[in-house]
Image (cartoon, rainbow over all chains, first blue to last red; front, side, top):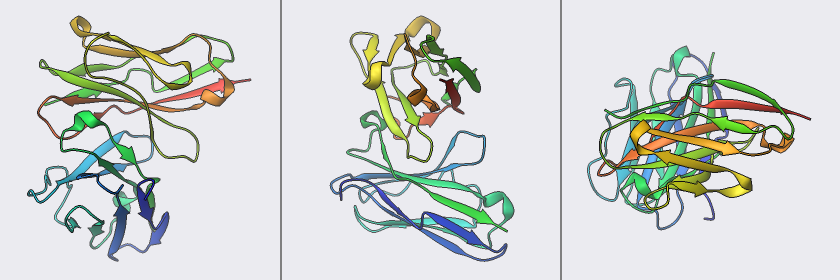
Length: 115
Length: 113
């Protein structure tokens, strides 16, 4: 597609429920990143995928968070047993190559609210 | 570890005023530097980037940034802001050889007409 597509755009969930967020990167972009943006804070790195290499999961805040990506296509970020502190905008970005030097193209994000 | 500091969290200016947003990073090696902008209700967009060469980089909408290696800085400037520049601005750094961008906490700019 022309841009990075994320769905849903908004999600309200009850505490303790699982949620799944989806990211569809730009075709041909081998690298895909997930970031989290809490209210009033900067972007917090979560996870990075590059081709078929093992993902860099160093930013995942707990084992309730996981992400998958099939090849160089869609990625899903799953949060299990959601907590109120998980409320944030979850941003996906893709990039031409595995080096951050290419810069990112961001999606519009998924606003997650845990009530 | 890399980190990025944006010292101004909120900036309020009148139209036609000059703008300078500070950005400092901590990393001793070669870096690529970026400014992203997020207009109200829109997604993050690349404003400008520095890879090498001329340390004065020009971006879209009249913005520019200067890389000063000795100061580890990459400040964003615009000589005359417009109401439409109201947005949040993020500085980001990528250390050569590392895969991810590290972002600052952002500066929220409000331009009053």
